[in-house]
Structure formats: structure tokens, C-alpha cells
Length: 224
Image (cartoon, rainbow, N blue to C red):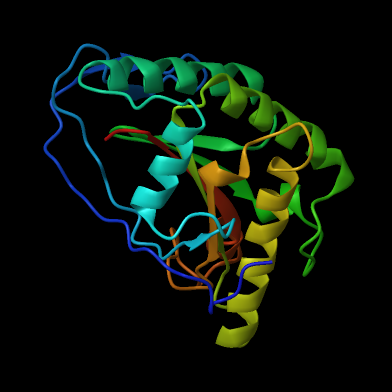
């Protein structure tokens, strides 16, 4: 389990995006298509992430470990195409699972609401959700040139320190399952909890609090 005493890294970035859009076949909403574009967005998530393994001492350490394992870095226009294909595969494999998929430039974010992932006030992944995580792991392994950040979030109910700990435990449970035997290479993964610090909806309503209780998996292309 990761704690707040683990090493941290701050991720940030914002580049101008120039890309055409396509229509998401599952939602009917327009989504960005970065294939063939030379300008890619790197929207920062603003999270401080601890390393899952002790082998990497920084972001460059994670990259070096993956390159050392024979996973090559992406470059140029290949990044957009690679993430487009990965996003499409996730949409196919996760349809109907309750997992939401967002695209932020060259990042893919899988949002796992707590009501489908965990029992109330618990951090153990519900048995029926492990099949979904198996699908996530299979797609992650099909696209090894992405790094994986697993971040837990909570609503504002209850004490701040309790929410922080619960968000860390839930993120650790998801990361631990994904990196189990025969699944995802641990060197790809960072894990952290953000407590109630990054709401995506109002905490004044039950619906908003439900959206804020979540684990996000942020996927970024491995580049030099």
C-alpha cells in the first residue's frame, strides 16, 4: 500500500491542441482524433503520484526502466495514432461496465465510480468488478508504450484524513490487482490518493458526491 511518505512527482502540462474531431459511437458526442496531428495536448492532472515499485526514483527512472525492458518510446505523429487505437479498444472492451472513458489530448482517463468498484466504505475491489479489471489489464498489455497512473478520490463527507486514507487504499487495491501475476508490468504504474482535493462535481448533492468518489487510471504515451 502506498502512503503519503512515498516519493512523489508532480505532473503538469498544457499544450495547444490542433486536431480534428470524430463522433464517439457509444455516446454520440464529438471526441478528439489526434491521428496524424503534429500538435498534441498534455493536460496535467495536478496529482502527486507515488511510485508503485522501488526500482524507479523519478519520472525519468520509470521511462528508463521501461526502455530497459525493451519497450520503445513513441515519437511525433505516432503518439496520436497509438492513443486513438488504445481508446477505441477500451471503448469496445469496457462497454456496459460502468467505467467512463475521457480523452484529454494525448491522455486517456478511465474513471471507475466507487459504487461499481467498491462496497460502501470499503477498499477491497468487489469480486464482480475483477472481470472488468481483467479487461483493463488485457488492453493495457496490448499497448505497453503507455504509463499508468492510478489515483483515488473521495467526496467531502467525513474527516479529511479519513478521506485521504480511503482514497489511497482504494487506488492501491486497483493498482495491486492490475499488477498481479500475469497482468501489468509494475514498473509502468504510479499510485496515489487525492482525498477530497479534486472534485469533479458539487459535494452539495448526493449525485455530485457519488461522482467525486472514484478511482481514475490516467494513461500517457511513453515518449522521450
